[in-house]
Image 1: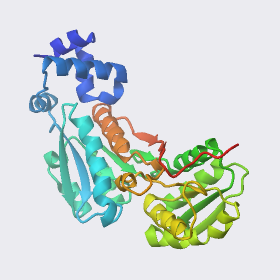
Image 2 (image 1 turned 30 degrees about the horizontal axis):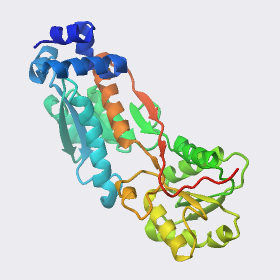
Image 3 (image 1 turned 180 degrees about the vertical axis):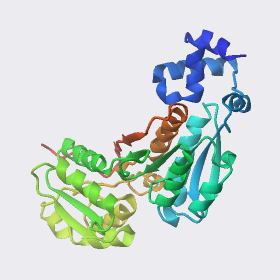
Image 4 (image 1 turned 180 degrees about the horizontal axis):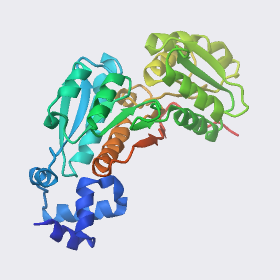
Length: 332
């Protein structure tokens, strides 16, 4: 089977088939689905090595990571890493490119690395390593940074928008009839992600007063913060709590249970991150999905197009609300 056969079955041009496998981000989703379905029906598997030779490239996209890096801490790293890898591979498996990983110690290693080591383009975790970015720019090597916060101007980036995530939490609570909100966070003056989520939630709540507890992050921090809210909840001054992340939300729910506060009957709780453990809690946590897999998938699509065109990359992904069992609709 050839690309011509796939094109005929899908009702598109051979050039469109080529773009689906080389630059999927520039093809309409409906056409991508038709091409991939036709390829599956015909048993067509693209020859990635031959395609790389025709392009005079390596035929690979490389995930670039610093040795020993733990971008979200040791406990959460594996969960996030699985989403990152899955997002990239979902795109690359449908393309003419293969997937690679290069771990570096210093920016000099990047500058001196043989061309094949870095593939035709690289994906980075964030933009904090400015020396690594400078080395890539000096080489003129295609790249894209992925992260949870907006990147500096002039940096190719795809990132999740925490302000929109905070707004999504507010919208979900307002739509279910909540009117007396609280927010539990931690280290807000030091951690930009926390500040952005608060900014979005506060703006999404409009002119409603929001009780803010800025304590410590994590299960213990959430437990301590929630204890400060128990009195107001029992007096019905608070009917919902938006928590800065899922781990902290675990501590919040534990403290409320120990104080005899029922979730969601007495107060609703929304977390943030959509970590895998929310499915196995006594009550499945309502949360905001940061869509990290989608960030890395979209970044990979954009990078494939940028490799071909040289165009800059600048996109943000909006997190989405994932309903659970910790939010109960209130009467309007």
